[in-house]
Image (tube, rainbow, N blue to C red):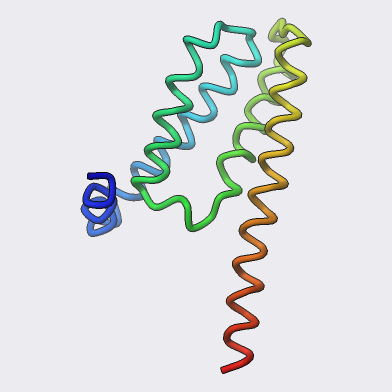
Length: 121
């Protein structure tokens, strides 16, 4: 079912872009809720919907934007005077940084693998 939905969304590029922008906004909203130390029940559903939306829109082609948005939105929320609990904020920032490094590594390895494959041909 998810593959069929993915194919339908990719047939209409405007829909794919709309879903991608929505996904980014949902990630930013969920990270903002984490920075405000909201309960998990408030921000986790937003994050799950965002990840599913990213898969449907075809975002797995590049993985780094979602963790990058998570980090930037969290840092922006903490910089605007939001009273954040450090016990919640620190794991959120560390987890976002680890996810960003992992996503960049995966994306970079795919690009390098494609380059090597084209050089051999």
